[in-house]
Image 1: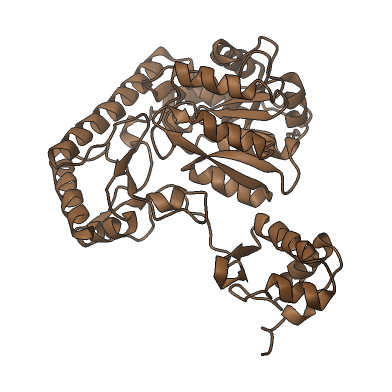
Image 2: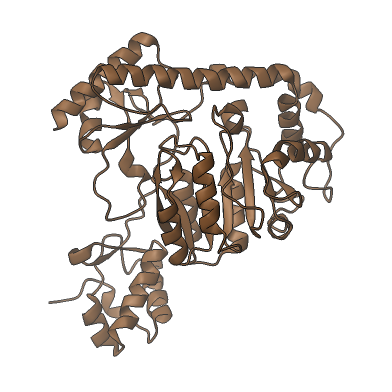
Length: 443
């Protein structure tokens, strides 16, 4: 039987050489998405290497996302499918409840802050972070840091901060502990960086201690945790759970722990850190995008001095800095008592609308928790894709839990994530009824 086109050109005597050979074949088009690679045993025999060498080569390729293992179906060149992205689905005629977006009507008007943000031009070579912004950010972050000895860094949003934090600490193929199910942008960031995602299960109180312990035993060098409004589940780390997780991390003080508190000012839950006072490498990231607009791409990060120093090296004036005008504008808005009061009202609105919808679901026999955040994580008791398809026939576009799963061998999700805060009461009633009918039709 003739080998698929290109596979007979695979060569090398070590796992790294074999992996590099496959990568070169893919890059020049000799191997295309979907092409099957030779079975491990057959490749090892042809190259005259130990079977374990071929296994290691395929593992390296899988971790980098270049190939996918399909069990008995073998190993194939990855199709290059993009990770699902947050936001509206373009071109859909359906009512989109999959967006995860804040309500634009609840985002404060920035026109008054524009005048306050105006100032002298900022030139090349000046400090990356505006002095007034740094002082304000330090006051915002300090009460929730594990140590008074920290530095403040500014980045173009939380995702940018996490990407830079991982890049300054990790090498390709290093392992990162991520919540499972996981925020879509974190999945994308880890895959693009060539890191290996290690799933840590999430329950109503956040990351599970047993899951984190197992990830640390698996050799993770970084942990990304969402202390409030975990996306997609809405979980918030409780005081008790935070203490348990700090105990688990106590024996691993040099593992980088990143806390992504993106929902901060909107959250109805208290902040509980999983980072203990003796931990050596940590970062607390807070973005402004959920409460003063996604287009305000700015986040502030508190981190230990060593991490901050390495992070600062990846932010240079004139190339990768964050606009001082944007910094000043964010500062002006978040220093305005009226804006802060409006943000607080928005947080209360999101929580109230989610509570209202969970009561409507309960009346339909679907038990869901309102959780914390912009969206709801709804158990449907049937394959989520089937329920979502039934909902589409009724005019709704929902997001299935499958998109947030990390494990390739995970069973089909039985959860939907929906964003309902901008629906009217009547629309909520219709959606709850349609969801119940779609669920029944999927059994």
